[in-house]
Length: 258
Length: 165
Image (cartoon, rainbow over all chains, first blue to last red; front, side):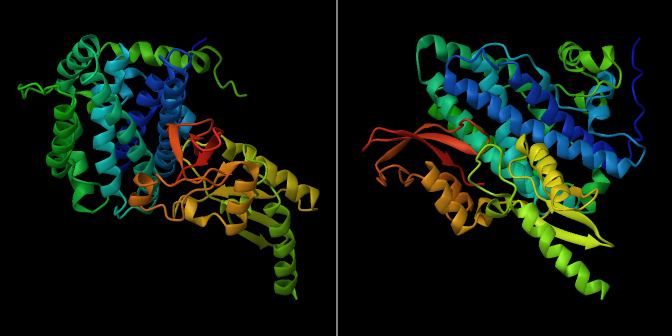
């Protein structure tokens, strides 16, 4: 027996909230894959803690999306009963963990963005999104500090750690543009003061990234071509594998609860 | 008459709910933490509002369950607990009493202000064992979402620090 996927009425606000919830869930799940495998105990705890922060943000956002949608869905149904094509997360966040440097670079690119984004969202005209932002902003600030320190340590460390960090930057760079993209469904929310225009965050993001990368004796790629598609459900092959693990219990035993 | 009765009940319900402790830090009540926000009584039915601490704090489900049990023990049938997100919880809401209890328990309490400056300038964390400020951070992320792991360079004891949030 299998469980059918749910249908979602993606009004602009539901879609907007689900996109951010999916970002947090998918990246949080990736971090949880490190649990018990990190290079040292402190880092194992750090990765699990950051993953937990993201999972908490995802839960609040899914619950809010469910309330706005008003069709009887809930946080669990959004997480467990949507297929790959229904997920709306950024492509960057579903990329496999790879080595430790790659996980850190992915987290660094995203956390610097998330910190700026949530800080701006604290002024959202939507009180729930503003409240989620007030929490997430502080959590992101810790993530930025932690990952920045690692980028410098890896880049300015040994020849091997430098090589790995540089190759992670080169491989993930093309996924960073999607964080700053806006489509028509979000335009109205931005005009209404509910959403933040991410294009306005890019200069500050690039400045922070550049400073840390320079300090780490690493370099940013010159190419400007950016891969997109996650926001409309066009994912890399990696997300399906992630979801098959994340959803396996609920798909195998429909409706199972603790 | 009904209004007076409800306000008496409200105080009794508040007192019962306020006794619930954080399962991870059992010396702190949810009132000390600032997690207990509101207790309302309508026609004898109690509704409690709590606010989550860290977004992913797994203790929140446990706390909600404990509140329901505490209220039922105090004679309130079918109490409900709801979560309010706004305004967002901050460590600034932790009571002075709560901070003292934390210190006595061996956890350095959060700095007084959760402003961004405090988030990133918390280098003066006093050791809860010997009081020395000659301390250093071992790991930004500790045994629970709300804590970092520190070490005292004076008495050599490691200790938990309740992070600003």
